[in-house]
Image 1 (cartoon, rainbow, N blue to C red):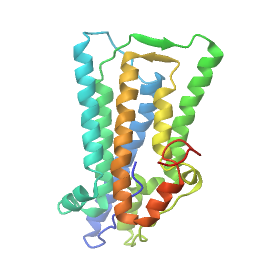
Image 2: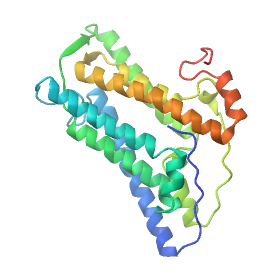
Image 3: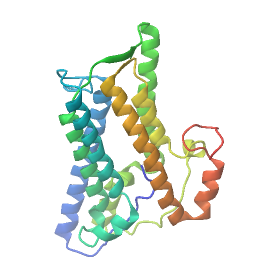
Image 4: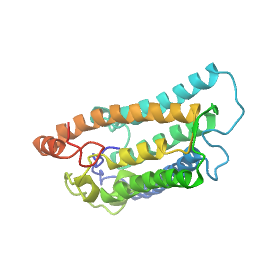
Length: 258
């Protein structure tokens, strides 16, 4: 998830639009937050009505094709809309104050579609039988989710999800200039949000074919996303980010950066 997310609000416009934009930003945030919470249950098989392994088994081809298409749709939406060239183009038509909120909402809806239409492949690849070890793995998965949420707050959770932008627009406040920051865990790993996701997806006491497909494809997408994101970060911050990249590991703390 990119650390470049500030697009300054255009503080011109009617008061009515500013209120509508603010309410829209709140709605987009709530949809995204609920979707993320559902994602925890979906991946871990907890509480939610449909998880990654819920549903009747079907043919080998149909779930594979459908699930790959669903993940591809999310990947394309999430990556294309995050690129700076796309933002420069579509903010000619989408008001800048709601650009981030619209991106967040679109990502949440594409993810919700994936949850809704996901086809299970429940054949078990491995299963941890020792209850204590299984609890340890579940705890590790929860720690991954906790790292994800904590990392968003370290770099301004509400800006990342678009609320900061619509709030500034509502009160006619100019945002500060974009700055490159590396708070707390960002001093040890460049992408703790992605690291949290990888841990959460792979730490499963029972790994099915469907779960393995989900974890494998999303991990591959994360690695691709990092490459695209870091290209944008270098374009914005130049040598400052290049030095950070040389100094700090990408995903594994204390491992020499490459």
